[in-house]
Image 1 (tube, helix red, strand yellow):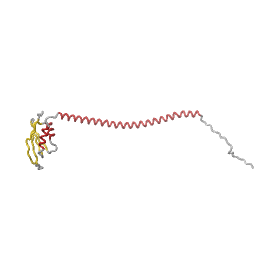
Image 2 (cartoon, rainbow, N blue to C red):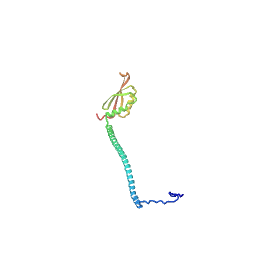
Image 3 (tube, rainbow, N blue to C red):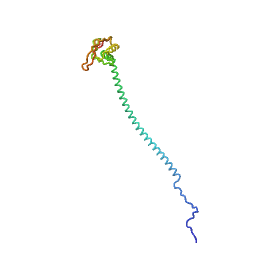
Image 4 (cartoon, rainbow, N blue to C red):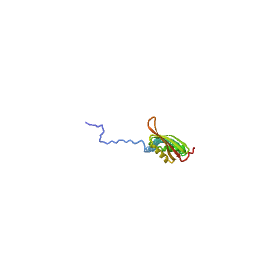
Length: 193
């Protein structure tokens, strides 16, 4: 019997045909030459888009900062206006204080001379020339010498004398009160008289 092997022998080396590229190297080189500028343009476009986004965010932040600064500017202007108003009022008060004379200075001196811790109140004050008569009440008669010494120490009066002191009973509270009258002589005559 004869055997015929129709299959090839696996031990034999068969040479396979290799496919040759249909694209030449020149075409590949030209493709690379065209692709490089496209890649560069894409990178440039991406960079520009990133810069636009960054600059837009910066613009938004700067607009918000500008709005805040404008608000602060308005607030500063309003504060400066109030400061000017307060300064003008202070200037007016200072001018009025400097131009005080006569009765205003007398009232200021008398008010400052009243002892703070004692129950003493004034009911009338009468000025005729350089003679001033002060009338008032107190529930503690020992407060009257303090008032006299304060009035004399202020330098506004030449002399301060007690003209009258009398004890009275308050009708409402049934308390003992002392009515007093002081006579003071001013150092200078009031310019209004």
